[in-house]
Amino acid sequence: MHNAITRRRALATLAAASVALATAACGNGDEPATGARGEALTKVQIALDWTPNTNHTGLYVAQEKGFFAAHGLEVEIVQPGDADPAALVAADKIPFAISAQEALTTARAEGAPLVSIAAVIQHNTSGFASPKDRNLTRPAQYAGKTYGGWGGPIEDPLLKAVVQADGGDPSTVKSVNVGDADFFAATKKGIDFEWIFYGWTGIEAELRGEPVNIQYVKDYDPALDFYTPILITNEKRVSGDADLVKNFTAAVSEGYTYAAKNAGESADILLEAAPDLDADLVKKSQEWLSPRYQDDAARWGEQKSEIWTGFSDWLYQQKVLTTQVDGTKAFTNEFLPSA
Image: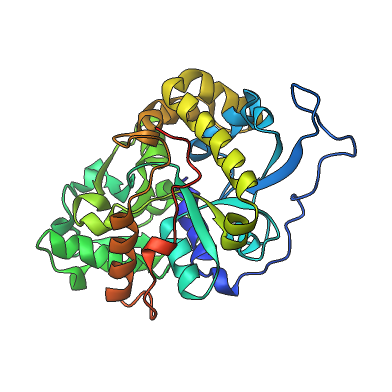
């Protein structure tokens, strides 16, 4: 997930992204799979926004525990290739993907027919983090410090908004593009703080004995408690393939609800699917993230209209968007199982 922020460069420029299907997005074999009652399963793909991590655990749980099969589906979880997964969904080359609210909103402003069908995590767990030895405990203290970013369209206004909300002067913060350098490398080479997901990079910092201070963006403006990541499809699927969307969403909901209650077992399922991951990091991250999947929502995946409208209005006010987006049309809760 420390690379998930980097990944957003592609997501946020979705309109210009290639819609060529990633090589990995191929069907599985020739023999049709069957469900418990012998019926043929419908093959479906979902593309991740980055390499597997604890944002995606519910998908692997749904696959391993048979939740997809119980809903008549054989699901292939596809890792992103050169093509942007959200662009593939917009072009209906693939039905589902993991994305983020800022990327989907930006894409809809460019005319992409994307729709969010579930919030993977109920509240925004990203924030500006720094090694503890920098003694940055509030955004106003970023004055005179160096921020390491990647030049995404939301980054600068987000940083300014958080600093201003804390009474600081954002014009005194220096920004440097660090490219693909990770948090740990960058903060050893003159960077004071970066935008990270605590549930991955923050946990990794703890395990490395290099703990961080973090200021969560949601704490400085209600509009910044946007959903990231999200489960997306397109308008064509919503209107013309509703049964598939409903069955897929139901199975994913079961996967994340199970992972929320069974962090240890779910971490093991993710590690089995992605054995190259650091086991200690996955287990600690899962323990931290599992209760945050649903958090204070009535059910996993629930999305609020005010979050979508508030953040789309904020993006327009900050001139990230030149066209206003109707946030109420960017998401739906209709495919979620009842609470």
